Length: 434
Image 1 (cartoon, rainbow, N blue to C red):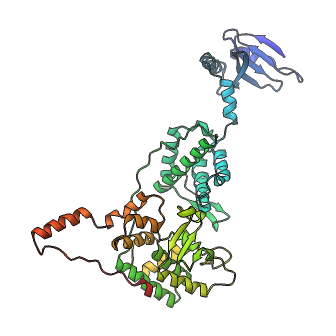
Image 2 (cartoon, rainbow, N blue to C red):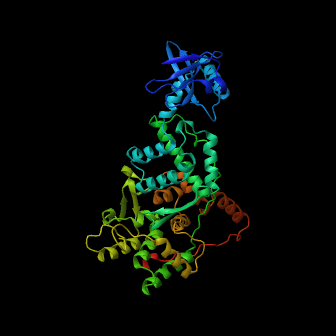
Image 3 (cartoon, one colour):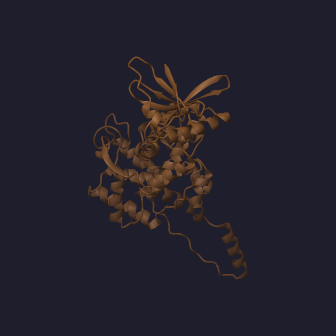
């Protein structure tokens, strides 16, 4: 290896000869800044570097290739900065090597999606699929190429803002979704993506892949509560319309039964549509769902859904008409798997029943509202709905009778006899007869 000495400048860099083929390299050492040098390779490539000693060991920190952005002046400034870090006990060469070997955000996403399910056994497969979609479609395009350990809180916050503004929205081809996948942004998507990204980085910290969680500190606005409760009159109209739709064959009877069970049990849509006959316990009059089929299980991780006589009647009738070999209570119309498309059927039923502004998930809220109105405590409502935390049931608190108001009413009635009001709610329809 040949060496030369001169002050590194544009003139000296241009003048240094290119080594012959077979020679390793030529080094031009700077006469002003100790350790700063230029490496010239037989290919003609010129690379700036700085050599330094840290303890007993010598290191070489590569600054960059001659050209934009590294000129002799900018390379000299970078060498000076590296030597200042060495004086403070830092090792820029080792740090650069570690950064190069570190996981990118895209690599962390794939590790989380592939290895995460084995470490979170109670998390449903469908939830993992949604998480993977959020991370790959929103976090990946914005931060995927960055080293995961180098993502700052400001960058995480900016990514969530971009998702809120719809910058990751796209319409792309998909093999699974009838040839197209429409990816939307917005506040709701950004909120779910932030939660998912924070969970991924927390998992990465737990498994020694990253050192910090930049998404944990990202603040989001509190989402508005969108709970819509059916009135008892609306519930009666819904059941009556289901009977009519089934009678005139305008809606598949399986959809009608699924909608009935959603309101009669307060179960989640996926819990009913994905219900298997092995999960129905007719003797104990309950549904027993394994942990992977529900958000929060009860004893031994299971979720137990109590069945009313009306719900049992639906299941008995479906069992009598069960197709041979069918595992699902609501088998798919075509192919294997379970029934899909209940939202569209529910929308048609609501339009026919003149019930507006209601989503299929609001049947679950309505079940809870009827239970509270009939005197069930929030604790019992939480148990019926399978809530993991009692706080989740607090959204129904305003539906229960306020003990303070009852105390004030009692004082008024005592002081002014005859002032009490009789406002008993209308009776809920006899759903067992539907």
